[in-house]
Length: 356
Ligand code: CP3
Image 1 (tube, rainbow, N blue to C red):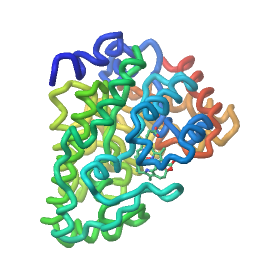
Image 2: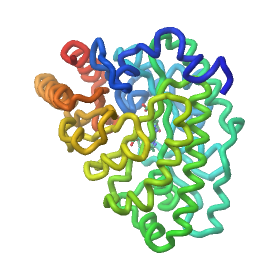
Image 3: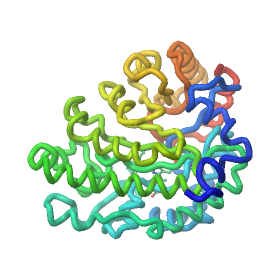
């Protein structure tokens, strides 16, 4: 780590370390409850749809000026407490040469799914030069964000494996689970390679200046706890371990993970993201002491009348207060594309006013 970068430099100056978001991640007292939204950049914002017009998703991730602008859009509009770097969990795989695309309305599609040992040859280690555009974009962002923290992110080994093995989005993850149960050795090797790629991708982002990282294991809720513990958690733990030395908060999130929350914290997270199915005070009983919580308003609530949104947001805030943990307000999963942006802005204002 060079001295001018990372948590000591980059976003370390300019009051970022004292922001409500980073204070909450560390479980310290906050002036107001910090709030940001998963998938806040893009999708629901007209200014995003306009600037992305005619530019394929993966191309847009490789254009630093565009990435900077898209990342800043929700910060300007909603006054959220953190920016999330605009990219995708498939970017590092594309960067090492995996033949894949992100198709509008579908999601990631992989040309040659990984189902045999020979298929593993598609996965080599990620070098910083593979993603120089990421370093450049984060540099531009850190210079512009002032005291607002920038969150970096990556896909966790299981969720990346699910796209690589299925070849695209999947409801039941049948090929993924067939490989996990049918060829445990190949499965471990696949997850090991993915943990190295993911760790490498997070290191690039931290060295470029992000103030926190989130590991998205979006689809890991498909697993029973014992299978998670023995077949997946070690690979995710390697990722968290690899970036522990930087001292930036590590957030761990998945959907439908009520039964996994304790293990997801134990994998090495400082903050555990919770979906809307488990109240935060209940989640606190499942997650080891000392770890903060993030969440957890149902994203579909934003389609309900404002009074209902406020009431549910207050319930989230009350459960968070009862949990006694650091709390970062968020949705229980990403912003849905047809969400009214003004409903999000109103929610931010409400949380800032009514959070502790
Ligand atoms: O706040 C943000 O939006 C930041 C950027 C961001 C994107 N993807 C941009 C994107 C982040 C944090 C992600 C993470 C991501 N990508 C996850 C984990 C988060 C989650 O929702 O669980 C996953 C599973 C993916 C994979 C992925 N990428 C899917 C399933 C899809 C298609 C469906 C969808 O949600 O739109 C994508 C495409 C994608 N990633 C878009 C954006 C803005 C839409 C692309 C387009 O405009 O064509």
